Length: 215
Image 1 (tube, one colour):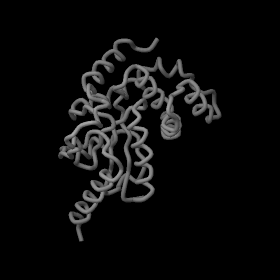
Image 2: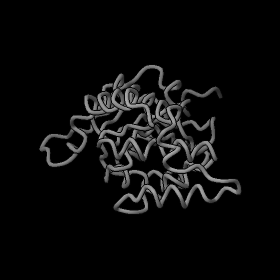
Image 3: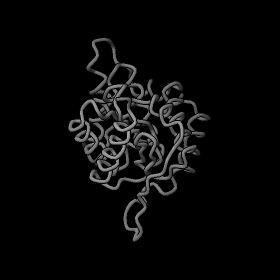
């Protein structure tokens, strides 16, 4: 059995933190205000990274596999990383606020990560409008030569669940209430304003790091 106590605690954390999960659109005021965060380097050192460890700009995205805006953001971030190459890294962290199903997918992604397959799993989930967790997990895990972990075994694993809970607690401590939310180096941004706004912040941070670097 999966740990009911740990899972219940995670649900409470994400429900409390994510009350405004889909409140990104339909507001007359502009909700996308970037604010500074201390200690962002430590927050960017944990999670699933794509890009060099010494990239001058790191985007930490707190995401939910059931969030349609997160899927859109994932596509746009992949394009930004191709454009900025060694200047940009992306770090994925979990914020599964949409319910138990989102927690299950997040936990399954952590099991895939133990086999070095986090991003293939991530991309496969976000490639479709509807999540077929059993099929996607089975297809990804079958890429390994040895007997793959079953989804049932994965969802009974308290270690992978604890890693999801760790990220959700960080999101709570940051005061996040929307998915996706971002840290772009020291700047926190909640909700997804589109790739143009994200790229504008990346360019600004990149200019800052270039000016601050020793000549």
